[in-house]
Image (cartoon, rainbow over all chains, first blue to last red; front, side):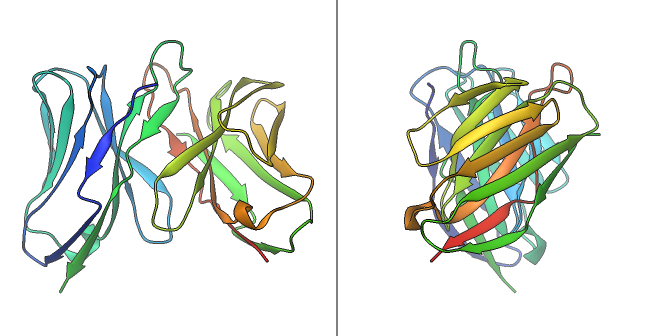
Length: 113
Length: 113
């Protein structure tokens, strides 16, 4: 199945600073999804990117899908303490995968007030 | 909208004891269902998935089993727990039309002592 490498593993920022997490694949992806998991909580779907070069925004969050559809990024502008959590990218396992997803290892974001 | 229910929220079990975790789904029919395990501070490992009643696929060899006795019920079991079975167990589902994002339940935090 398809694999994704997510970096960095950890990111500590001061409130107000920007944050970016990256996902990279050695193969072309059909789509990529992003999830957020608050401490002690469960993953929550944020967005799905499908098109080459796609950029989507949700308030302070900007999601990008690379032109080659092999990488993606999530950028948060001016972080707030509510942004704390783990951000995961996820890709379809491919073929007749029955919707199975392969998750990146996640980036744990800590925001210092 | 789709809702995943899981219980219990936390569980402490002795080594060698049996396990049964239940997941139920509301708001959709014939969903694909998934069991994940998450070690502390780590990513999501897919354990089992099911595309219908009685249909179970295992992703990794392990001490656990899964069953789907009803369309909206997914059960994770073990006859004898091991210390290594400790973790955060998440049930997820998808199937809302063509969108393939997964909806997660609140999870069960299992500690095996």
